[in-house]
Each structure stands twice: as C-alpha cells, then as structure tokens.
Image (tube, rainbow, N blue to C red; front, side):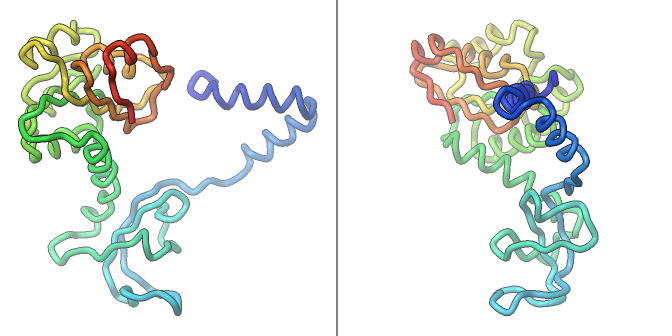
Amino acid sequence: ARERPDLVRQVIQKVQSEGVLNTVNAVRAKLDSVTPLGYSAAGTVIGAGDDVTGFRPGDRVACAGAGYASHAEILSVPKNLCVRLPEDVDFEGGAFGTLGAIALQGLRLAAPTLGEACVVIGLGLIGQLTVQLLKANGCRVFGIDLDAAKVELARKLGADDGCAPDDDAQRKVLEWSRGRGADAVLITAATSSNQPVEQAGQISRHKGRVVVVGLVGLEIPRELYYRRELSLK
C-alpha cells in the first residue's frame, strides 16, 4: 500500500461504486492471477508465423516487451519486438539489450549535445548505462545516488563527479556545472518519493530539460518548473 498508493485509491473508489463484497472478490481474483515476469530475453527461433519475414528457425535473436519477452524457456513474441543477434554477441549480452534501449530512449528524449552538463539521478543498472551513453555522446556527467558504492562505480565508468542526494547536491552540481546548473537531468531512480523530480528542478539551469525514465513520484512542483521554464518529458 505504501509503494502503490494509486492502487489503494482505486480500491477505495471501487468500494464506493460497487460495494465491499464485489471489491473483495475482484482483489482476490487479481491476487490469485499469474503474472509472467520479465521483459527482455534472448534465444533461438524454433518457429515463425506464415506471415513473418526476416526470421526463420535457428536464428539467434534478442527480444523485448512486457508480456512477451518473459523469463521463460519458450516465448511467443511479435516480430517487431525481435532483432537478430550479431555473431559476436552471446545470449547473456543479448538478454540485456532492452535495458540498453531504455537508457538510450532517455538520451533521445533529453537530446544532449556535445559538451553539455548532464546529471543522472539514480545509479542502478539503467542509470549506469545512461552515464556511459552520455559520456560516449561527449557530455560531462554528474551522478546522484543514495548508495556511495554506486556513485563510485559511476565514476569508474566515466562520470566526472557525483554525490548522495542529501549531500548538498544542489551546491555541488552548481559548482561542477561552473555556476550554470545542469543542461539536462535524467531520472533513472525507482522510488515512490517525489524527491527526485523536485531535486531535478533545483539543479537544472534556466530552460533545462528533465527526463523521467524511472518509476518515481510525479507531483510536479509547478512554481519551481514554471519559474525556471523547465521542460519535462
């Protein structure tokens, strides 16, 4: 309930509209239902539909998509969610392809340019990939995470600097960005808290860009974002 207050509100609304008994039965049915885990996998094609072109049995592929590329021995995946694996990429590497694509999509939305100062909030797996992609794009990168070990890992993978979110991060980002603030902030954290979105606004430069990649609280502090003319995607 603490992690998903939105679902709690849905239950309360259902009680008000359909009654307690119907709601209890609906919740029990939902809890008893089986949900396939995972959204990224790799393997060998064992069969293809008659209308499928570009893939045939024996092809090595990576695939993506919740409800399709699950953690299972046999999958059924639409052709547009599959891609051939290059010869020098093994199945383990291919199974992580979707994570790289998520990080890359965050970059595409942020549209960083050469030499810009970019901050990544949340240095888990996707955050670490984002750091490396930003560096490959010619950007300066600052990482923020509660775990000091993850901040240090980001430094080893190319980040110019980093700190914890409560370690005077606003001042440190301002100094690191030569007094201007971040050109772009990419939020790759996973938390119900609204703190990452608020902090992104505080450390951004005027007319900066904020991109939310992770699952975080999204109560936008309007005055802060409005006053600084920030873009949020």
